[in-house]
Image (cartoon, rainbow, N blue to C red):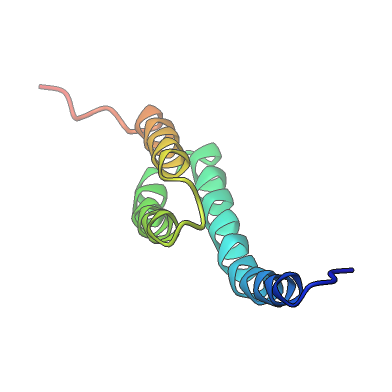
Length: 93
């Protein structure tokens, strides 16, 4: 248990920040899982559409320091690479 006034205040602040950040992180993880599921089902069009939502969420999370900027970039890159692997070949000549 915190003893000083500043430590007590810090405890209150971290609890309220945790309560604010938890649903955002949870929604982000769910959205990433959704994209990965679409990739495993080889559903290129839907996966690419959902990727735009994930990228926006990751950028917002990085901007508000919910995630490290490099982690957000790494996740976006890996998802894009996975989606490009299932991209259908263009129609031949």
